[in-house]
Image 1 (cartoon, helix red, strand yellow):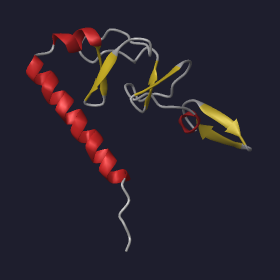
Image 2 (cartoon, rainbow, N blue to C red):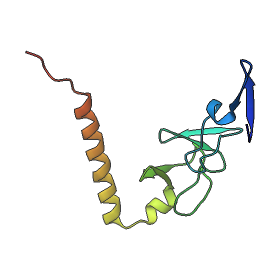
Image 3 (cartoon, rainbow, N blue to C red):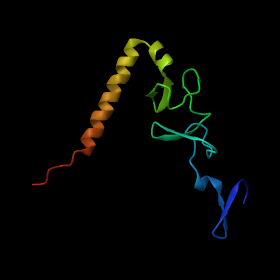
Image 4 (cartoon, helix red, strand yellow):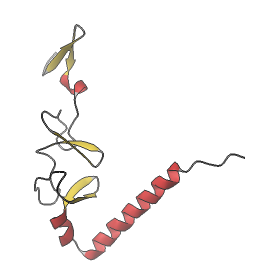
Length: 106
């Protein structure tokens, strides 16, 4: 077996089977894991998609196309784009609420 392995139960296993994989770099995360936007990220990979500024969970950011955008970059976006993004987010939340509603059986 090539690459990094873990020995367990008398066998060798690929290390990827035992850890979180970073959404950005697709590598097994070694060290701190940032859990944001329903994904796992390496601490070094969790950054603004627009300006590449490193982010932490203490920083304010928004989600655009499943990726983080820092507050500074978001505020520089045109108002029309921000309105469209807000509308898309509302529609997604409404759709999710509809999925959770159970049909009434008669």
